[in-house]
Image 1 (cartoon, rainbow, N blue to C red):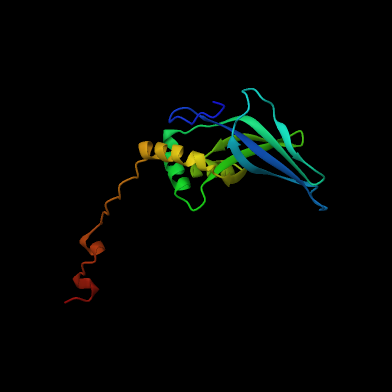
Image 2: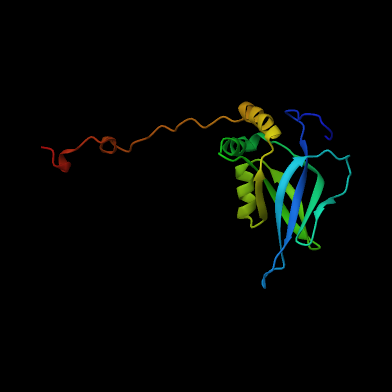
Amino acid sequence: MTGNAAPSRLAPYAIAIIMERVQLANRWATERWETRGVVRNMLPEGSAEQVIVSDEKTTQILFPGHTLKLHPDEAEGYYYNITSPQPKLFVMWRLHDGIARPERVTASYHEGARWMDAEETVDGVALPTDLLPWISEFVAEHYRPEPPKKKRYASSRDKGVASRRDGDA
């Protein structure tokens, strides 16, 4: 999906990811890469990445052609994200030929955490505000919190009932 169309509940949401390289004056590293942001993809399908900022210290590259897809089995992870104080998108990226290239993006806290547990490079960036209603609607339809579990007691002692051995005569 490209252009100005709003996302549907079922279709993936077309996005472009901004990666930033900053030159460092450091003896251990000459540069640092990080995800700078995610925006709606407004470029025609098949567009290549393009440099959008370039100076002596900073380079930003726009990577179009990515999609945010929502999956019912990740609804709990979306819920925890959108109800947090600062909802985010999580971008997993890898270095290819010296350039940080985004590989995947998710709105699920759980999926982002799994990527980090697998030792992938993952950045969290602010969730674009136009995505919040779309994700909220999806969560309302697909997320059902687990009901509280009943407490099971092994004996009446576990319920707080004192027995004679506890000093009650």
